[in-house]
Length: 115
Length: 114
Image 1 (cartoon, rainbow over the protein chains, first blue to last red):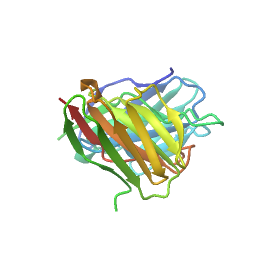
Image 2: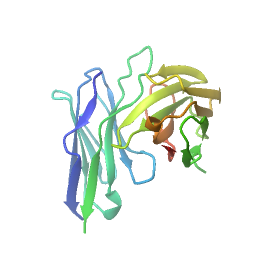
Image 3: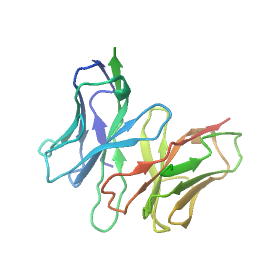
């Protein structure tokens, strides 16, 4: 079936720099997207979401951008901190009226913060 | 208070055994899920229940049987465990089937079959 994928499996950035994690999705029916953060030994944790009627949404130090034309999502993290080190997943919900298909996750990007 | 709690956190068992993983959510959510995360961190949905009714049943061996006694609980029973069942299993919940607001995940159960 269609899937959500990530461009880079590992991203290493200096502490204090900004990070950008990218994601490509292929299901044009998806209208809801979420970024999750997973720290070692823990479950995925919700960071930020965006619906397809928006192209940008900001949270605390994070911004999600959605480009429906090229089916691309990105997560920007400002002024990265050691605590940002984790695996980041994008997920799409191909919900279509009559029933939910459940969140489909991308492969994950491991963000490493260098001191 | 833990929102989605699953037990046990670690489970080591021999091939052929039967085991269960329990999950409870105290968020008042209608929908619960089981996901499997493999060694490459890939997360794949296995089942979802909405108000105790099975909604999603992905291509999962019938050795895996979910049970939802009420909408706050979704347990996973696995019969005749195989080496390939080794993975981390995550329970999650969402407000409803639509999933707006995202899913809340438990901390996972690491299953090792030896």
